[in-house]
Length: 123
Image (cartoon, rainbow, N blue to C red; front, side, top):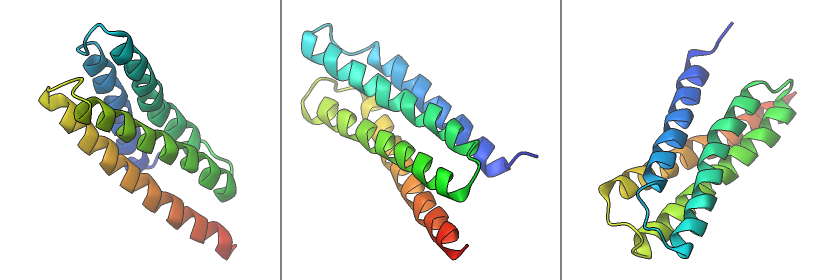
């Protein structure tokens, strides 16, 4: 049995990863942009991959641990997108759209971790 909200979030995190990979290809061909783009790609794809893993958790405790990793990856993605925008590596509107999505995902996973942590402490 699948959870529609979890399925929707799986699709959303995958879309974020794919859109970030597409955006990375627009960054300038400099060493600095390459290094930051690589870090951004790793963290953005990490959000999607680790959320999928969290959905397969066997317990609330395992879910809390895994969702914590997802939260870290989402926040790291936001950080790299801030570096890209504030550092002037990209003036493309897509950078700000992705930054907003990274911040939204960070908020979602922070709330999810709090809820799951409370639930596991009640047992």
